[in-house]
Image 1 (cartoon, rainbow, N blue to C red):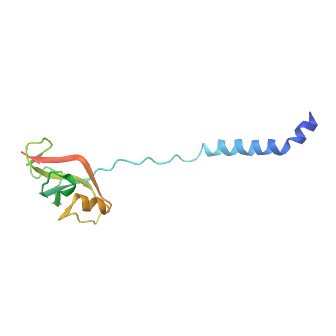
Image 2 (image 1 turned 120 degrees about the vertical axis):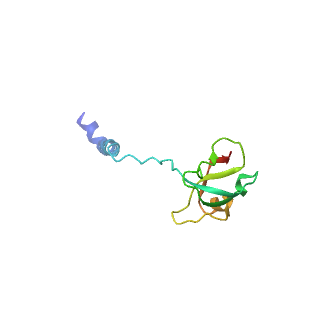
Image 3 (image 1 turned 30 degrees about the horizontal axis):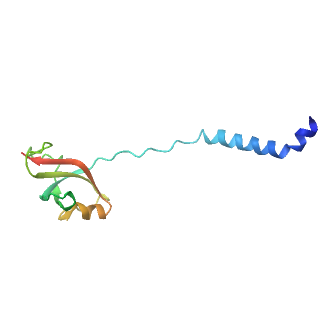
Length: 115
């Protein structure tokens, strides 16, 4: 038995190191999950049937523009929700496609319409 252990000592040491490494790695910090970002609302200057060509205006607060916008499709778009590429980015007079090309994101279904 002693000869068998000595013969395979290197393999046993490697196995012990591997087992210890796996055990210690399981106690490390957990990776952070990517949180869904909420965007800011911007007025729509010029609506277009193609969402990528919507011309964006200035900030629209919470997207209600004084109660003139609603989430139901009763009229033309009046506000869209965007995630800007960086805080100082100005989306005014740009299309959604231009904003996305610059690293921003159109949140898709987050559109409000005029009543």
